[in-house]
Structures are given as C-alpha cells and as structure tokens.
Length: 361
Image (cartoon, rainbow, N blue to C red; front, top):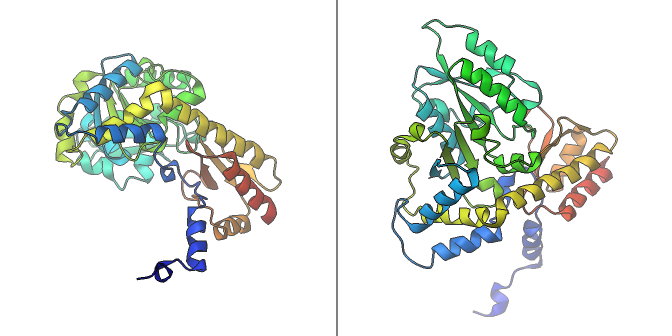
C-alpha cells in the first residue's frame, strides 16, 4: 500500500485540527492528567507490586495524607465521586436515618439515587440556602420539624465544599454548622469534589477546613484536580471507619491494581501541586468573571469564589457559543450557564471565549 493511499484528506485533517482545539469549559472533568501525576503513574508501572492496596504506593500516599491533614486519619480510595459520597454516607447511616443537604447538592441532583441505594433507603432531606449553602437555621428547622418514629431520624449533615454554585463555606460558617450538629448528635460529611479549590480560595490548611472545623468524613477529589480518576475518602474519626474497606469491596470499588489510583496522588501531594493546580484554576475563573461582569447584557449569578463562573446570557448568545464549539452546562446550579476552569486552563482559551461572546453581543 502506498503512503498516498493512507494520507488523510484535507477535510479529515481540518476536522482533526478542530477536534484538537479545546473549547471545553463545562467541567474540570474534561481536563487531562497533570504532568506530575502522570510521572508517578509511570513510576508505578515500572515494577510489579502487590494487589488490593497492599502495595508500597498506597501506603506511601496514605502516610502523605496523614501529614497533609496533621492527624492519624483513615484513608480509602475509590474510583469516582459518586461512590465516595454514596458509600461514606451509607456508612454513617442506617436505612431509617436521613441526610440533610442543600437542595442543589450533587448527592440530591446528580448521583442517580446512589446515597439512597447504598444506604438501603436513607432519605435525603433538602434545605434551601443563599449561594448554594446550608445555614444553621435551615438545618435546625429540618431537624426539629418532627421527632416521632414515623419520620426518618436525621443523622448526617452533608456539605459541598466548594458548593454547586461555586461559592465557599468560610471557617466561621462551618463552625456554626458544627454547633448545630453537636446539639442534635449529627455527623458532618463533606463532598470535597473541589475541596482543593476551597483551600486555595480561603488560604487555609486542609486540617483547618476539615476536622478542626468539625468535619467527620471528607471525600477529597483528585479527578477534578489533575488525576485520571480516583477519590480519597478520609475518616478523621478512625472509629467511624471500621469495616469501610469491606463496604468498598462489596460495592465494586476495591481496585485490584490500587497503585495506579494511589501513585498519581503522590504527584499531587508532593510539592503542593494539588494546591497550585487549584490556585491556577481559581485565578482563571476570576479572570473570566471580571471580564464577563464588564459586558453589557451579562450578569453574574453568584460570587465567583473558586474555579466556577455562573452567569446569565441572552439565549441567542448561548446558542451561538454552542454553534462555535464551546461546551458549558445550563442545568447545574440555579440557572444560567456554568463555566469551569481547571489546572490547565489558559488565558488564551478564555480570551477566545470572550471574543466570541463580544462578537455575538
């Protein structure tokens, strides 16, 4: 066969070039693996090792998490965020319990009933709150609404940090929620899909933003911060973690080649890459938010405190952006369009988006 026979046509070349031009801003899930994580993945692939988390990489990264959080926490790895949230909530609840969460919480709107399924029926109780946040008053109202045996007993408060609309719980807000939890014997679960971005936004340590503020269990996402996959479920009260490894196994979340989930985490934890990635993503979102706010006809819907920007656009603008290949969500949060920046988002990409918006306007 001659080389001419397999050479791509001009149309095919053009399509390939267009496909390689990233216009993905719908989620930080669309970004690739950061170089530091990839380097550790390759290191773990050089030699064979023990299976099911008995390898040296899993032990090493677990110890690193304990150093990062300044406490002897228990650490487990699962494949994705839905499993992390669902299994940890199921572990904290009996089927007759309930979980208090914000009405926009990911566990309520985007996990296909996973928490209810794995808990064998624990009910999610939803509360409203400004800027995507639960309030002590909203929690108190749900807890005290009923106390009879016919009502699922509240057991856990689930907070998303950063929230589903890109805002961040302050330390003071977390401490106030902890006070309510203590009054009613509730535990606190934190969906940390963008936990790194919250630490960067508040400029506080992981310990300050979790167990020192009263969080019992954290689901710490690596996927949205530069990994291919892998979430860490971290129990700060080690007694609560008893038998959680069995729950992971039963749910199909025990990776046989665990080192390929654990080792890339070393790339994030070493030299604070996880934090630098988050700071960069937050900075890009701030860059975009400031420029969108200056455009007539566009309104920011929520404070852009981390790596997400929510804004309302005229419908013809959104349609035109989609025609030009831009991806964004309009069904997440409380209306408007969501743009999410990642560890590898560039000002060039955002400037191209802003140019298209100005052209259409």
